[in-house]
Length: 310
Image (tube, rainbow, N blue to C red):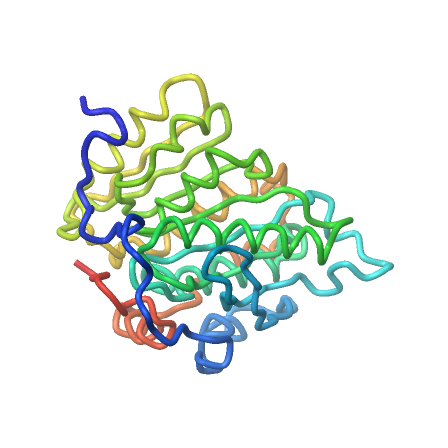
């Protein structure tokens, strides 16, 4: 079996060796209000929704500039009377080769809302775009800057991170995860293998890999290889969805729940302590049908660039 760095199934979307394109990057005001919360959140339960802040994270590298994102904060997070930050953990959610902020089938909206709205979880979540999508070097700088930003803004409440990435997003997730000990777990959906050598430095920190066997954009062989490269000296899990596509449109709700539970486990939160109302939020679908999910992805920029649903 080839080792990381010897082959590149999605080299066409990994351009770290080339100069970044001269384009007008998206800003926090580029996104419509419809992508601040999951569409069905307020129909699902009486649980009080967390706050969503549009933020712009400055990046200090050779290109400079800033990267936009949506920061979901639990109600009362970091207030003097708040006890919502016991885990000290935050989540950063990264999209594919075109950037974006809603993830495959829009599940990042739902994941972020559930993490911040379920009081027993109370985990902040940042849906982060990229300055230069598909340029892993610069995307990694975006992630590192976001981690620095959150730890500086909430020094008593955030010190650890779980990183989640879709498709190309697996590259910055595993690169940063393999090199920064603040990262306590990584999850990928339909990941590429190009520029993911960091997976070998991740153990024993947990790794979750999700992939559809019908994915025609990135073969499930990619996730199988990442599983092997990670090795047996840690906590690894590979879930293959029979016949599903690149965005896991047939199994998005199950994938979303697996990711939420993975994040909670990394953060040390006991899911069996959720009350009935919180379980209702966890179990509810907050996005809707496939057509609605695709519309969410379009509004969030997740189908820009080279990403596809199939």
